Image (tube, rainbow, N blue to C red; front, top):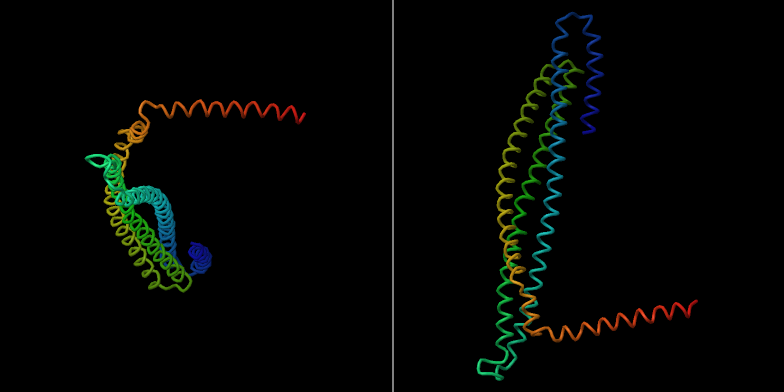
Length: 265
């Protein structure tokens, strides 16, 4: 951008100088100078537009990568829970089933297998959700790159237009117009491709996230943790025994603290 601004300022000075010189040569010389100035102004607008598109795509790329990091965090959490369950299942291989006709470890084993099924699904859906961000990240990256190429083409065009003013070269001016057209074509092609990829990838992300969140809601709604605690402590007897101990511990702490304060005073 700085190079383009410098070229534009330089060309404006050159256009002024050329205009003063052309005033003495007649009205015919004014036509090309004004057209070249108009061309440079339009190319300057193209450069600013390209820069805005590049900035927008980079912002979207950053936001998408942050969301992808969150999805990967959920996948890592699901993988950790899955591996812990697998370790508990490995321990069950060495436990003899002789305490009852069905085996004393069967309730525990059934519970572990249930958790294995739940966590394997959670890991699968979270991985699909995290992986679905990759095409969107690639689309934003390619979009920013395509707009940068269009900006570079426009900057070269404005430099050629300034040379057309300085050297009075009609060929340089016409070439700058060609580059401006190429810049517009590059902008349109990049925009169409990027919009298509973003729409398709966003839909996949939405479906993957929805499936994962629905699974998580099902796990939370089933109250599996509360049911497990209730199975291990029917009626809450052990929990009730622990509550007075915790309350007593808190009272002793409160009683010791004032005595310490009095001793301090």
